Amino acid sequence: MKEAGTIYALATPAPSRSAPGAISVVRLSGSRAAEVLIGLTGSVFLPAPRRMSVREVIDPMSGEAIDRGLIVWFEAPHSATGETMAELQLHGGRAVVNAVLAAIQRLGFCRLAEPGQFTRRAFENGKLDLTEAEAIADLVAAETDQQRRQALKQMDGALSRLYEDWRRQGLRALAHLEAAIDFPDEDLPEGIGDEVKRDIAGLQAAIAEHLADRRGERLREGLTIAIVGPPNAGKSSLLNLLSRRDAAIVSEIAGTTRDVIEVHLDIGGWPVVLADTAGLRETADAVEQEGVRRAWARAAEADLRLLVVDASADWRAARQELIAVSERWDETLDIVVVNKIDLASAEGADIVTLSARSGAGLPVLLARLEAALATLMARGAGSAPPLTRARHREALMEAEASLVRAGTATEVALAAEDLRLAMRALGRITGTVRIDELLDVIFRDFCIGK
Image 1 (spheres, one colour):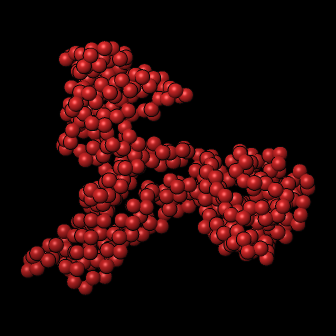
Image 2 (tube, one colour; image 1 turned 90 degrees about the horizontal axis):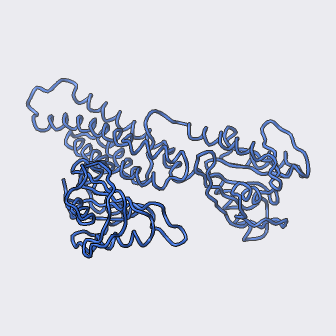
Image 3 (cartoon, rainbow, N blue to C red; image 1 turned 90 degrees about the vertical axis):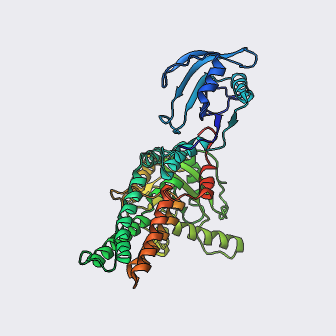
C-alpha cells in the first residue's frame, strides 16, 4: 500500500451566503487521519472504526468549540482509498466549514487534497482500476438516468472484467508463442501454431466488434438530433419549445438562422444535443449558402433527424424532396414533423403533427423521440458493455492493429512481439500498465474531495 501523506478536503459543495448547506462533509485520508480526529475532538478515545459518533469539534490550538457533529474513521486497508480515512459531518455554514479546515491546516501535518486525489489513491492502492475510477467521474457528472445507469455498470467493473478477460486470453496465447521460442527442440503439442492463430483471430474479431459499438460514447457525450427543413417551417420554434426557452431567434423572415444552434436536453432519460439548422433552399446569399451547407453536414452527422415542414404549404412535396436528397434518412428513426397545424390540418400515418406556437402535439412528438432514441441505442447491443471514452478507443484500436500484425506474422518472434504490444495496450485501459502522465490527465478533471 502506498503512503504519501495525509490529505483533507471538503467533499460536499462549498456553502455560500446565497446557498448554505444543511450538512458539510470533510474527508481525510492518510496514516494520520485518526490523529486529526483526536486533535479536533480533544479525546484520545475514538469510536470503533466504521461507527458514527456525536462529538464536539474544537480548535486544537485554542480549545474553542467550533461545532457539534458526527465523526467516523476507517482503518487501513478497509477504506475507500485503502488508507486510514476519517470524515466529519458538520453543519453546513461557511463559518463552520472554514474554521474546521483552518484548524486541520494548523495541525501542520496535513495538506489540502488535489482534484481526484482520493480516487487516485484508491486506484494506486488497488481498490479500483482506471475504468472504475473514470466511472466515478462519469457518475458525478451524469445528468440523465441513462448516463447514471451506464456509469454504475462501469463502476461495478463490467468494462474492466471484459478487458481483463481479453488480456488473459492474449497472455495465454503469448505464453504458447514464448514456449515455442524458448524451447524449439521440445515436443510441444501438435497444432499449437494453428490454435494460437485461432485465438488471436478470435480476440481481434471481438475487439473489432466492440469498437464498432458506439452506444457508450453516444450516451456519455449525448445523442445528436438535427432539426432540418425548409425556411419558415418552424424549426427554431420547435427548438425553443423542446428546450423550454428562447434559445433561437424566431422570425417570419426566411433565412434568419444562418449557423447551427445547439441545446442540451434530457429526453426520457437520454442525453440529447439538439441542433437547429439553417433552412434548406437554393440561395444566392453567400452567408446563407454556408449555413445550408452546414445544415446538410449536421444532418448527415446526426444520430437522427427531425424534418420540419409547414402544414399550410405543400408539405408532402417538401418532405419528399428533402428525404430524396438526404444522405442518411432512416425510416425507422427519423421523424417528419408537420408544424403549424393551427393554420392548416394535416394527416398521415408516418408523420407527427404539431403546433410549435401552442404546443399541441408535443406529447406525441416526445413519445416518438423517446422510442427512436431507445431503438437507436438498442441497435447492435449485445451482452458486452459498450466502451465509453476516447482513451479506451485509442488503446483498443492500437491493440487490434497489433493483433492483425500478429496473426499474419511469418516469424514466431514477430508474432509474439505484436501480441505483447496488444496486451500492453489493453493493460493501459485498466491501469495494469502504469503511465504516470496518463494518470495526471485522467484525475485532473475530478472535483476536489473525490
